[in-house]
Image (cartoon, rainbow, N blue to C red; front, side, top):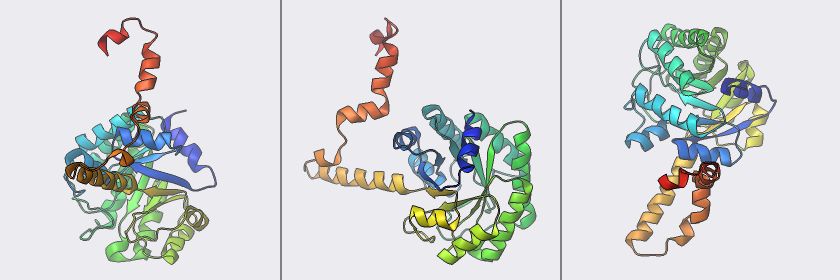
Length: 289
């Protein structure tokens, strides 16, 4: 089964799929080891981890696709890639979608923000006009003629234009062929219910701890009607907190063991055990390790 087919099979289930978001190959491996069925390569987290900069359009298309390829090579669960605004006009969107498909992604997200885009829960974001927004999704859908991949269509219109405009845009995205709809940053449970009641197909919620959208339980999100609940910053935030606390302990010459993963488990999760098992079939392997 291809990665797009795996994702289609998940979306066909009448349930909420909890989707922790990754930012590199290792975090993606941990998500798969944790038993989760899919992941999303968070643009916010990937920009922070790869180039140490905020998610404000600073990371290039080539860098993003390279990160997606590394993640897909390291895991077997479906990955949704963050295609941002498509990196240009409609023809650039087509290239972006093909690039993510050929990197191994099951789906790619294309959004209607004005470039350079911003995190959906930070100030200053704006969206392009309807015609340009629709052209982006049409171009993304057209690109599937050459490479099979699902399209996650995102609108940030709620921020400046209200929920009705966001829902209208998302409805048109569905008509154009988008597989998953993402109305970013509804501010209340009532708005979340409107998104799911008024729009067809699979919908995704984006849960940012401390963000604008209510952080509901999985049961509540499923009852409202979401098919996917994305957690874009949870793992990166946890990792950054753990690293800063450990660095503080190291600087103060305090015990670090309580904050560290056991070395045996660390090696296993990275893949040392699997490597040695596979390489044991080749007599010369251990001379080069």
